[in-house]
Each structure stands twice: as C-alpha cells, then as structure tokens.
Amino acid sequence: MSPTVKGFQLKGVEKLIGPIAAVLGFVCLLQWYIHGDLRSHLDPVYKAKQPPLVMKGGDPYIRALMRTISASEASGSRPYSLLYGGQQVGNLSRHPEVCVKIPVGPNTGNCSTAAGRYQVINTTWYQIAPRYHPSPMRFMMWSSYSFEPEYQDVVIYRWLSDSRVWGTDISQQLRQGKLNDVLRKLSPTWTSLGYGIENNSISRSLPNIYQRMLKEELKK
Image 1 (tube, helix red, strand yellow):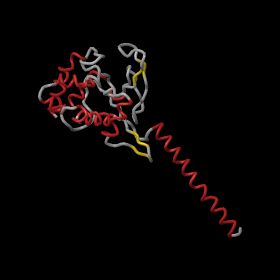
Image 2: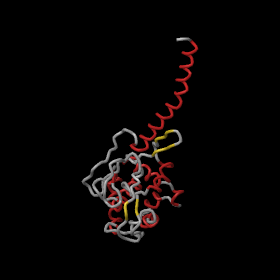
Image 3: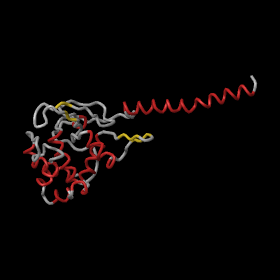
Image 4: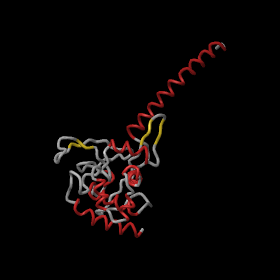
C-alpha cells in the first residue's frame, strides 16, 4: 500500500473520531438521565412512627422540626421513597416526578408530584436543590440532584436554616418556644401542619410530636 493511500485512510479514520465520540457521549448521557448513576440507593425501612433522620449532625431544633413535618407528610415505614397517595418509588437517583391524581380535598382532580420524606413536589425540588444539594452530579451543561435519603435531609435542613428564604430565623423561633408561629409560617409549603388547607389526623398532634422529637434530638 502506498504512503499516500495509507495516509488517506488514516485521515478518514481521524474524521470519524469526533462523531463517534459525540455518539458515545450522547449514549452515556441518555443512560445517566434515564437510569441515574450506578450506585445503590439506600431506602431504609423503619418500625418507629417518627424515625430518625439519615443525615448526621446539625441543629437539634431544626432536626426535630424536620421529623415533625415528616410525621404529618410521610408517616410510612419507607418515608424517603413515598409518593403522594401511598405508593413507593424504586429509583431515588433523582426526584421521581410522578404526578398522582388527587382524589379529595380542595385540589381534587389535579395531580401532585409530592415525593419523599418531606413530600416535596418536583418544581420545588428543582428550585432548592441547586442551592442546597451537597453533591450534584454534573455532565457538560446538565446537572442532576440525587434524591437519596441523606440528600433529602440535607437539602431540607439547609432550606429551613436559611433565614433569607423564610424572613425569620426558624431555629431561633423554635428555641424561644414559638413552634406554632413556625408551623404557621411553613403551612403554605406543607399544607398539613395545622394552618394549611389540607389538615389530617396527625395535624393536631404535631406540637406533642415535636416535643418528643426535640427531647430525642437534644440527647444526641
């Protein structure tokens, strides 16, 4: 084979490298988007009605508040994978974004994407995760925010701790014994906290639940 022909063939192969790399990159991105990363996603199962957080450390008052919120919003044995309506989701690599039809109440006929221990809807998650998520996965121009239990806890913890968002220092209010003021402040976000539009059988018990949770958290 002549050097000229051989050189021509090599140049032809070089021209294919770019498109092949682009296709492989797209395939990897598609798999990442659909399936998430390949790590196992812990979904703890609890026997206790108000289980501890997966997240370690932090302000005991905010932690107790988080457990109180979840007592009303997601009181199942697998709260971190709970969808609105009671079904469980298997993939926690990102927010499930499953819209479940609302059967009763003021929003009957609409659907809700609420998911996880704090029943966060998808639009809220994608508003707060970029600011508070500790380990976002980035690929070129795209970002993904794992919905694993620890990350649910961390994002909500940091959100509740951000006084700029709520216009008040929630931790300080809790330390001053102003739980009802805090629950009222949060009721537009979590409507089952006693001052919203969707109270449930747990709503009236939340102050007592909070006191029990705080007692546990202060012992840690």
